Amino acid sequence: MRASNLYAPTLREVPAEAEIPSHKLMLRAGFIRKAAGGIYTYLPLAWRTLRKIERIIREEMDAAGGQEIAMPIMQPAELWKESGRWDVFGEEMFKLNDRHDREFCLGPTHEEIITDLIRNEVRSYKQLPLLLYQIQNKYRDEIRPRFGLMRGREFIMKDLYSFDKDEAGLDVSYKKMYDAYTKIFSRCGLVFRPVEADSGAIGGSNTHEFTALAKTGESQIAVCTKCDYAANVEKAELSAIKSGDETEQKLKKVATPGTKTIEAVIEYLHLSIEKSIKAVMFQDEKDRVIFAFIRGDHDVNDVKLQNAVGAVELHMAEKASITAFGGVPGFTGPIGLKKDTVIVIDQSVMNMKNACCGANEEGQHYINVNPQRDFGDVLVKDIRQIKDGDPCPHCGAPVQLTRGIEIGQVFKLGIKYSGSLRATFLDENGREKPFVMGCYGIGVSRTMAAAIEQYHDADGIIWPKAIAPYEAVIVAINAKDSAQMKLAEEIYTAMKKSGIDVLLDDRKERAGVKFKDADLIGYPVRITIGPKAVKENIIEVKVRKTGEVFNFDRNSYLPAVQKLLSQL
Image (cartoon, rainbow, N blue to C red):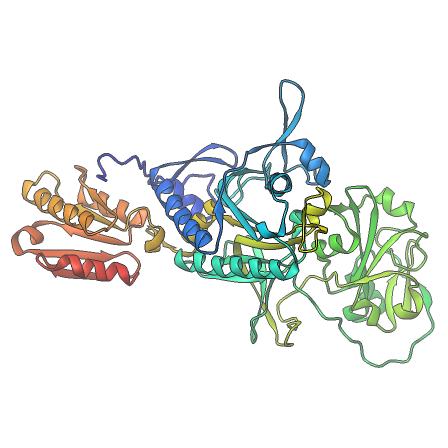
């Protein structure tokens, strides 16, 4: 390809809408253009990178036994209603009606479609296992599309679904995909970490997120400083904190006028914050009110709480809803709430001795609270948000919190979908059994953005060679100089024949403009053809990643460039 023919409209100024490096640089380097909020057109450079990522994915999926298919983007509501997800998936689902008023959605994911396909086609255990995948656009009506390709309403995703006869088979399929994902992201040149995660709207049991480490990532992960444990903070386990031995004192109600915050209460009562119990009230999608109680210096993990009570989503409870169950905002506690109230106590709270909590009366708190004695029949769960320095649940060493970008996730679905959709096969004994399923996704467009978040500098993108739109660019300093252009054309032809993915910048622009564009776009290697190359047969080669400049003889530059590229 010649730069004079390449459609790559670069920008010198940073667009005001762009917030993070990948969004800024993909707009500036001519990779994407915005069509609407969260919806982008991929220009030629982006499309080449996406195709290279897809090729790596296909090679590893095929090597693991996957077979590529293509499923419809528009999906009938009947299947989603059959699985029970039509009304609970949430407002992220794009829904539409055809001219006959039949309901459809734009696929946010494909569990229902693939399960329906297999239940109608596969009847015997002899046809298992099956690994079927596709690479396709997905659609989710994000409440706040942002960060370019990180949080969009239309995005490219690879999803593979496994069908096995039993849990042992699922374990094998899951391990195949886990290993394949490790190879894919390694080949893409990313620095990543598989972490334990919550399964969210997809459901199922075990799941791991593959997270590209980056300061701008939306995912927060807890990483042990000693062992291999790593988990998304939504999933990160915490052991119950033990309290010291104390003699239990008699429960007592005391006046605490005007103390509606934990800080005000402990100051008024002269207590340490570790002796206080904090109330946080939520409502779910069914308008159930959930009263959650944690230690005063801790925070509620919304996802853990959702899972504990079987909620799809949570939002802060309204005052009227709190008071309807006997609570008083600012003075709510577990003692004295109405029967049938949903009360969830963090496991560490249950170990507290002689603590303080609200008394469900304005200006009143209880002291000498001993939860094991005073709280009665409540749901006890780990609902605490992990924080820096908390002990690792596996080895006890401190954990550190860092940020990352979710680029892939693997799920053990079990019979969640095959059960609800009555997708069965006949086993070795002729008995009907539900398929045991797994689901495995990779954000293709997000992987491209994640690579930029990890590899960029003040001048632009620094692509890993495997997914760079072009591996090398040849820059003729003066395109009007026939000798320079003749040599540039000669090198261009030789590099193409050798298998190098190369671009020739033959534009009649100043050398500085070409150099700036080369750095902005991020070609791994730049070959400069100027007077020195013509007169002295010296070919200058610059490595974008390190800034190193090498001078090679005109008669031996090609193997030298190939060696450089092989090391990137």
